[in-house]
Length: 193
Image (cartoon, rainbow, N blue to C red; front, top):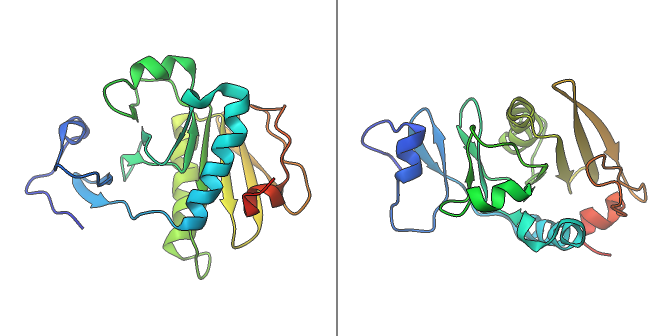
């Protein structure tokens, strides 16, 4: 964990550079390193990148490096995959951060890291904390891809609240944002056509 001598504001954090490629989340002014992704998480994110790029283009699908400013603690998140709007392409020129004064992305996807139970940090982070933060941020669609439970949960923002639908096995995933998408839960979970 990185300790900063003083508590940083989000604006100070945006200017922070320790000369490494490390990613950090800002918790109450203190930096915490974001752990690296597992091979499976990366494979699923890359698979989805290829699927979404056919509909929106390669520039608008970003894996692991795009940062979202959110309300609460931490003040930022790094989704496994994000589909951005055209407007974001020019706004992200200096730094790959969508701040609160920018429109939300179209889609955020999180691949849940292994967990022991529903009280585990990995489970809580993706199913509870990020869900709340992404809902408050107004992200229209949020996917939770859970390889352990073999479920893809699609959350759609309806009147400011997420409504969830779970997909398993050979069920085709239904996306309001990307209705032309032709993927089953099994294809996503195995990262295989």
